[in-house]
Every structure is written in structure tokens, then in C-alpha cells.
Image 1: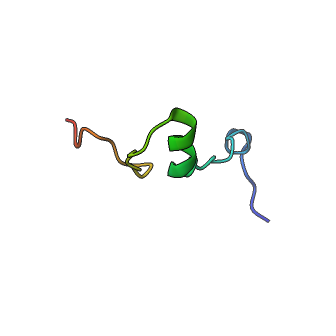
Image 2: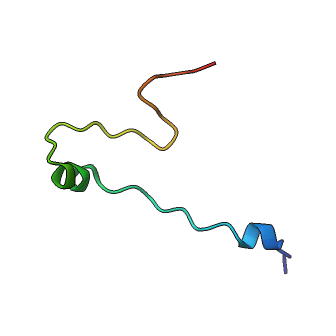
Image 3: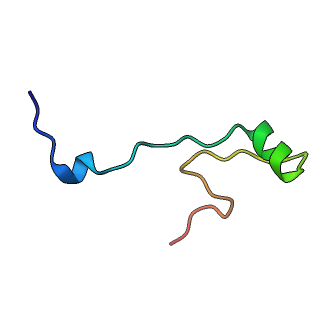
Length: 46
């Protein structure tokens, strides 16, 4: 059996984002663009 530290146990589970259709409906949008979790609209920053 693997021992897991308390600090790891305290991490909350990942909650995936809403489907784009739901976001558009909630915000009254018609042409939203879906980005992956590791993307941003401004590109690479240094």
C-alpha cells in the first residue's frame, strides 16, 4: 500500500470547465472561443 501525505490528501479534486454551449447560454454570447486549461489569449509571456 502506498502512503499518501496529508498535504496531498488536502488537494481538492479537479473540476473541469463548463461546456462552451453552457457558457454562451449563461452569458448571452454567440461566438465564444474555447481554450484548453493550459492556453491563454495572449500567448507566451516572459
